[in-house]
Length: 165
Image 1 (cartoon, one colour):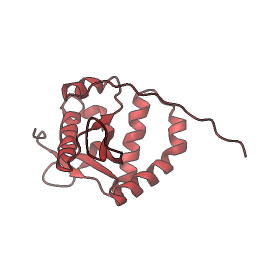
Image 2 (image 1 turned 60 degrees about the horizontal axis):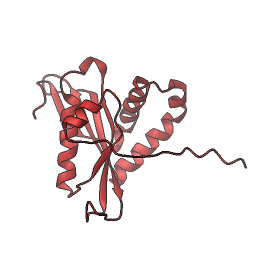
Image 3 (image 1 turned 30 degrees about the vertical axis):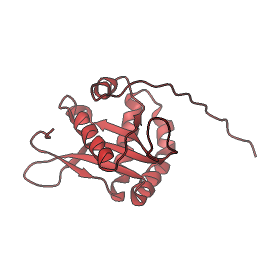
């Protein structure tokens, strides 16, 4: 799928960590998270993205919007976290992909940019021989993921309370 005119796709670098985290913050605000709680972990998120991009355990994809061949403003992004898992009945591969940080700024939505980002992420998964890809879908993102073949799965979560010193 080709991006609309004026949009370009590029890989993220560690220098993009703050931009990725800002998009992540906006994504969670859109889903109803408390902005103050997000602000409290923002710097830790920037550090995580910087470290994982540099280590190659996270691959970021960014869409820029700009005219005339100039580097544009980042208006959308997605990422893949590469996880080491044992083979199972579904695959003999030890690498799994977890897609996260799929975000398109509101004024650029409706142009299928999220789908294009997902197609690029899935192409990277195929190129690496990864055959199990998971993600957590927002209500808004679910139709895009289902159209790409993602199916719901059972997952549980437990938040452990902090241990008092």
